[in-house]
Image 1 (cartoon, one colour):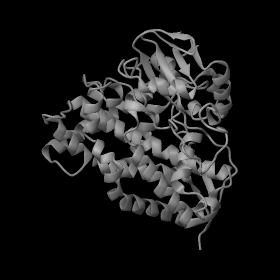
Image 2 (image 1 turned 90 degrees about the vertical axis):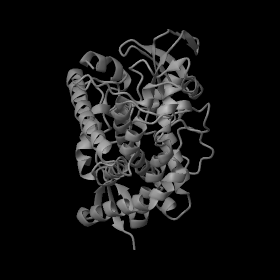
Image 3 (image 1 turned 90 degrees about the horizontal axis):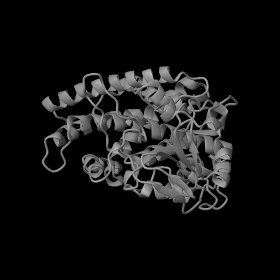
Length: 411
């Protein structure tokens, strides 16, 4: 992955290059939906798609809009780990291979299976909050104290890797999803991505080898078993790609989902109403997903010439669909720029749509629900600390690097 590739494929649109713009991109989305719902960006060599119906169409048509040609990745791109080892993952595979790879671990992420994990997730959440409250003197950082460590510990336990590695996991994940902005060096970003992918990849190569010799009750062992299975076998590269994907996705999505939820409740003065049961937490979280989607964009490649909004997209052209814009489209949602905590139905696209609908969506929903319930149960008089927010530095992941809050202990 060269610096030029990263600049061309992952950099922000010019209108969102500044940090303030990426913190609140929704006015730009609104202008694009009205004036240029499908437009070509020569700086990034891609088409941008902004309206709900068009975004949904792209995500729903695997034959016309493929994920396979290497650059169409929602989380990570294929990269050489230095020993001829190629990272392969289901998000870079169209059906039927995508479905075969996904089937290996899909049951572990079903709502039915995850119900058994809820007590452990709640225990982890309470431990994290107890530590934050004990050490915080009425303040905590929602991201650093809760939203980041919770999903990393959970996915690490599911994979079978030690949770004490979570700081390293965060460093790797942040580097891999980083994008270049106006003040960033594309070559430096690309080098950090390459090094992080290599380090993470080699870590999982070693762990996969250990599980081949000593299988356990974890997802890595499940993947090792599937490598030799007749029905749903994985190659070594596919097992490695699945490990990396689950770790990054399990870290990033819930972290930003939960932080965005707290930010929404604070900005709309809803902490007390939700804590008192006036609004149901699951419904509130669905509106958070629509209103401030943790993943704002996904990429596809056109497999043939196709027309969208009277624009002709050529075969082989890259297409970026803006989920965050689609979820604010007044053509689909009444009063779309208003946060409605009991909005129903939502039909948002925060977790994608179609074949590549996010595998970890049920886990992200569960973790966010448990964390928000425990937070609102344990503290009161919540408010954001008056400090500038810094957006996550990624052109598709949306959140903030830190979210300090003040509170009183609940009686």
